[in-house]
Length: 232
Image 1 (cartoon, rainbow, N blue to C red):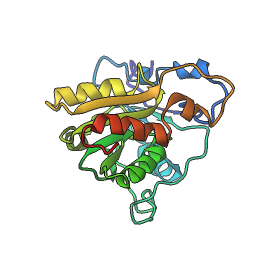
Image 2 (cartoon, rainbow, N blue to C red; image 1 turned 180 degrees about the horizontal axis):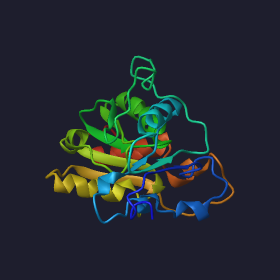
Image 3 (cartoon, rainbow, N blue to C red; image 1 turned 45 degrees about the vertical axis):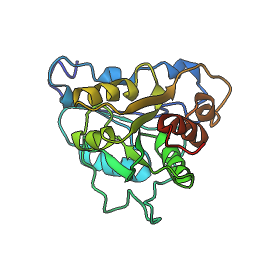
Image 4 (spheres, rainbow, N blue to C red; image 1 turned 120 degrees about the vertical axis):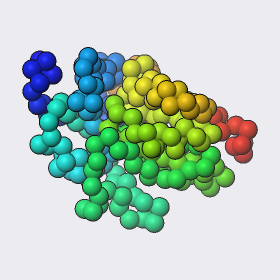
Protein backbone atom coordinates (compact mmCIF):
# COMPACT_ATOMS: atom_id res chain seq x y z
CA UNK A 1 0.00 0.00 0.00
CA UNK A 2 2.86 2.38 0.73
CA UNK A 3 4.15 1.89 -2.81
CA UNK A 4 0.73 2.35 -4.41
CA UNK A 5 0.24 5.57 -2.45
CA UNK A 6 3.75 6.89 -3.18
CA UNK A 7 4.40 6.93 0.56
CA UNK A 8 7.76 6.65 2.26
CA UNK A 9 8.40 3.54 4.32
CA UNK A 10 11.32 2.31 6.42
CA UNK A 11 11.11 -1.29 7.66
CA UNK A 12 13.60 -3.18 9.81
CA UNK A 13 13.68 -6.98 10.00
CA UNK A 14 15.90 -8.61 12.61
CA UNK A 15 16.56 -12.37 12.81
CA UNK A 16 17.01 -12.56 9.03
CA UNK A 17 18.86 -15.37 7.30
CA UNK A 18 19.56 -18.53 9.31
CA UNK A 19 22.63 -17.75 11.44
CA UNK A 20 22.07 -18.44 15.16
CA UNK A 21 18.45 -19.17 14.27
CA UNK A 22 16.35 -21.56 16.34
CA UNK A 23 13.16 -21.04 14.30
CA UNK A 24 14.68 -23.12 11.54
CA UNK A 25 12.82 -24.21 8.43
CA UNK A 26 9.79 -21.93 8.87
CA UNK A 27 12.14 -18.99 8.18
CA UNK A 28 14.34 -20.57 5.53
CA UNK A 29 11.76 -20.43 2.74
CA UNK A 30 11.03 -16.73 3.10
CA UNK A 31 11.49 -14.68 -0.07
CA UNK A 32 12.91 -11.37 1.17
CA UNK A 33 13.20 -10.15 -2.41
CA UNK A 34 9.41 -10.18 -2.70
CA UNK A 35 9.54 -6.71 -1.11
CA UNK A 36 10.95 -5.56 -4.45
CA UNK A 37 7.81 -6.43 -6.40
CA UNK A 38 6.74 -3.03 -7.71
CA UNK A 39 5.61 -2.65 -11.30
CA UNK A 40 6.91 0.91 -11.72
CA UNK A 41 10.41 2.18 -10.98
CA UNK A 42 11.96 -0.73 -9.07
CA UNK A 43 14.80 1.43 -7.75
CA UNK A 44 12.36 3.37 -5.52
CA UNK A 45 12.54 0.22 -3.39
CA UNK A 46 15.84 -0.79 -1.87
CA UNK A 47 16.78 -3.81 0.22
CA UNK A 48 19.77 -3.49 2.56
CA UNK A 49 21.59 -6.23 4.46
CA UNK A 50 24.68 -4.76 6.25
CA UNK A 51 27.54 -7.06 7.18
CA UNK A 52 28.59 -5.63 10.55
CA UNK A 53 27.69 -2.98 13.14
CA UNK A 54 29.79 -0.29 11.47
CA UNK A 55 28.09 -0.68 8.11
CA UNK A 56 24.65 -0.92 9.73
CA UNK A 57 25.15 2.44 11.48
CA UNK A 58 26.45 4.10 8.31
CA UNK A 59 23.56 2.63 6.31
CA UNK A 60 20.88 3.87 8.72
CA UNK A 61 22.48 7.31 9.02
CA UNK A 62 22.32 7.65 5.24
CA UNK A 63 18.91 6.23 4.38
CA UNK A 64 16.81 7.21 7.41
CA UNK A 65 15.29 10.32 5.81
CA UNK A 66 15.49 9.19 2.20
CA UNK A 67 12.27 8.86 0.17
CA UNK A 68 10.91 5.58 -1.12
CA UNK A 69 10.63 2.12 0.39
CA UNK A 70 13.62 1.00 2.44
CA UNK A 71 13.94 -2.48 3.92
CA UNK A 72 16.82 -3.18 6.31
CA UNK A 73 17.71 -6.73 7.34
CA UNK A 74 20.10 -7.99 9.98
CA UNK A 75 20.87 -11.27 11.69
CA UNK A 76 20.15 -12.44 15.20
CA UNK A 77 23.80 -13.38 15.67
CA UNK A 78 26.59 -10.97 16.58
CA UNK A 79 28.87 -10.38 13.61
CA UNK A 80 32.61 -9.65 13.74
CA UNK A 81 33.77 -6.36 12.28
CA UNK A 82 35.21 -6.55 8.78
CA UNK A 83 38.88 -5.64 8.48
CA UNK A 84 40.97 -4.34 5.61
CA UNK A 85 44.00 -6.41 4.54
CA UNK A 86 46.18 -4.17 6.76
CA UNK A 87 44.09 -4.98 9.83
CA UNK A 88 42.24 -1.66 10.07
CA UNK A 89 38.45 -1.48 10.26
CA UNK A 90 36.80 -1.34 6.84
CA UNK A 91 33.60 0.21 8.15
CA UNK A 92 35.08 2.83 10.46
CA UNK A 93 33.80 6.33 11.26
CA UNK A 94 35.21 7.67 7.98
CA UNK A 95 33.20 5.22 5.88
CA UNK A 96 30.28 6.74 3.98
CA UNK A 97 27.48 4.48 2.86
CA UNK A 98 26.25 4.96 -0.71
CA UNK A 99 22.95 3.22 -1.57
CA UNK A 100 23.39 0.90 -4.55
CA UNK A 101 27.19 0.88 -4.33
CA UNK A 102 28.98 -2.40 -3.62
CA UNK A 103 32.17 -2.55 -1.57
CA UNK A 104 35.23 -4.41 -2.83
CA UNK A 105 36.64 -5.85 0.38
CA UNK A 106 39.38 -7.87 -1.33
CA UNK A 107 40.76 -7.54 -4.86
CA UNK A 108 41.11 -10.75 -6.86
CA UNK A 109 42.52 -11.93 -10.17
CA UNK A 110 41.27 -15.54 -10.17
CA UNK A 111 37.62 -14.79 -9.44
CA UNK A 112 35.19 -13.02 -7.12
CA UNK A 113 32.84 -13.95 -4.30
CA UNK A 114 29.74 -11.75 -4.02
CA UNK A 115 28.00 -11.78 -0.65
CA UNK A 116 26.11 -9.84 2.04
CA UNK A 117 25.09 -10.05 5.68
CA UNK A 118 26.68 -12.71 7.84
CA UNK A 119 28.09 -14.44 4.77
CA UNK A 120 30.61 -11.60 4.34
CA UNK A 121 33.01 -12.36 7.18
CA UNK A 122 32.95 -16.03 6.24
CA UNK A 123 33.80 -15.16 2.63
CA UNK A 124 36.63 -12.86 3.70
CA UNK A 125 38.06 -15.67 5.81
CA UNK A 126 37.75 -18.06 2.86
CA UNK A 127 39.50 -15.56 0.59
CA UNK A 128 42.44 -15.16 2.97
CA UNK A 129 42.85 -18.93 3.32
CA UNK A 130 42.57 -19.49 -0.43
CA UNK A 131 45.37 -17.00 -1.06
CA UNK A 132 47.63 -19.23 1.01
CA UNK A 133 46.71 -22.04 -1.41
CA UNK A 134 47.66 -19.97 -4.45
CA UNK A 135 44.24 -18.60 -5.41
CA UNK A 136 43.76 -14.83 -5.46
CA UNK A 137 40.00 -14.56 -4.90
CA UNK A 138 38.31 -11.20 -4.37
CA UNK A 139 35.31 -10.43 -2.16
CA UNK A 140 32.48 -8.00 -2.93
CA UNK A 141 30.01 -6.97 -0.24
CA UNK A 142 26.65 -6.28 -1.88
CA UNK A 143 24.75 -4.54 0.91
CA UNK A 144 22.11 -3.09 -1.44
CA UNK A 145 20.82 -6.46 -2.57
CA UNK A 146 18.34 -5.55 -5.31
CA UNK A 147 20.24 -2.90 -7.28
CA UNK A 148 23.07 -3.87 -9.66
CA UNK A 149 26.25 -1.83 -9.28
CA UNK A 150 27.54 -1.85 -12.84
CA UNK A 151 31.12 -1.02 -11.83
CA UNK A 152 31.58 -3.97 -9.49
CA UNK A 153 29.35 -6.19 -11.64
CA UNK A 154 31.76 -5.62 -14.53
CA UNK A 155 34.79 -6.13 -12.29
CA UNK A 156 33.48 -9.50 -11.12
CA UNK A 157 32.05 -10.51 -14.50
CA UNK A 158 35.35 -10.02 -16.30
CA UNK A 159 37.13 -12.36 -13.88
CA UNK A 160 37.27 -16.14 -14.46
CA UNK A 161 34.39 -16.94 -12.09
CA UNK A 162 31.74 -15.44 -9.81
CA UNK A 163 30.37 -17.18 -6.73
CA UNK A 164 27.35 -15.68 -4.93
CA UNK A 165 27.19 -16.67 -1.25
CA UNK A 166 24.10 -15.64 0.70
CA UNK A 167 22.18 -16.43 3.92
CA UNK A 168 18.88 -16.52 2.04
CA UNK A 169 16.92 -19.08 0.06
CA UNK A 170 18.90 -20.11 -3.01
CA UNK A 171 15.69 -20.42 -5.06
CA UNK A 172 14.62 -16.81 -4.54
CA UNK A 173 17.72 -14.93 -3.40
CA UNK A 174 20.51 -12.81 -4.87
CA UNK A 175 22.05 -15.70 -6.79
CA UNK A 176 19.01 -15.88 -9.06
CA UNK A 177 19.26 -12.18 -9.90
CA UNK A 178 23.01 -11.72 -10.12
CA UNK A 179 23.40 -14.28 -12.88
CA UNK A 180 20.76 -12.48 -14.92
CA UNK A 181 22.48 -9.13 -14.38
CA UNK A 182 25.75 -10.61 -15.63
CA UNK A 183 24.15 -11.94 -18.80
CA UNK A 184 22.37 -8.65 -19.48
CA UNK A 185 25.72 -6.90 -19.20
CA UNK A 186 27.23 -9.32 -21.74
CA UNK A 187 29.38 -11.03 -19.12
CA UNK A 188 29.70 -14.80 -18.83
CA UNK A 189 32.16 -15.97 -16.17
CA UNK A 190 31.86 -19.42 -14.65
CA UNK A 191 29.06 -19.01 -12.15
CA UNK A 192 28.00 -20.64 -8.92
CA UNK A 193 25.78 -20.00 -5.91
CA UNK A 194 25.60 -21.00 -2.25
CA UNK A 195 22.43 -20.32 -0.27
CA UNK A 196 19.83 -21.78 2.06
CA UNK A 197 18.64 -24.92 0.31
CA UNK A 198 17.55 -27.55 2.83
CA UNK A 199 15.54 -27.98 5.99
CA UNK A 200 17.16 -27.60 9.38
CA UNK A 201 16.08 -27.99 12.98
CA UNK A 202 17.53 -27.89 16.47
CA UNK A 203 20.55 -25.79 15.63
CA UNK A 204 21.74 -22.23 16.16
CA UNK A 205 25.21 -21.30 14.88
CA UNK A 206 25.42 -24.79 13.32
CA UNK A 207 22.94 -23.74 10.61
CA UNK A 208 25.61 -22.00 8.52
CA UNK A 209 27.58 -25.25 8.39
CA UNK A 210 24.45 -27.28 7.74
CA UNK A 211 23.57 -25.06 4.77
CA UNK A 212 27.16 -25.01 3.49
CA UNK A 213 28.11 -21.35 3.62
CA UNK A 214 30.83 -21.70 6.24
CA UNK A 215 34.38 -20.81 5.24
CA UNK A 216 35.44 -24.40 4.48
CA UNK A 217 32.43 -25.03 2.24
CA UNK A 218 33.00 -21.74 0.43
CA UNK A 219 36.62 -22.66 -0.21
CA UNK A 220 35.57 -26.03 -1.62
CA UNK A 221 33.08 -24.42 -4.00
CA UNK A 222 35.66 -21.87 -5.13
CA UNK A 223 38.15 -24.63 -5.87
CA UNK A 224 35.54 -26.34 -8.05
CA UNK A 225 34.84 -23.13 -10.00
CA UNK A 226 38.52 -22.27 -10.31
CA UNK A 227 39.51 -25.58 -11.92
CA UNK A 228 41.82 -26.24 -13.62
CA UNK A 229 43.74 -23.30 -12.06
CA UNK A 230 43.23 -24.49 -8.50
CA UNK A 231 45.93 -26.58 -6.87
CA UNK A 232 44.14 -29.66 -5.62
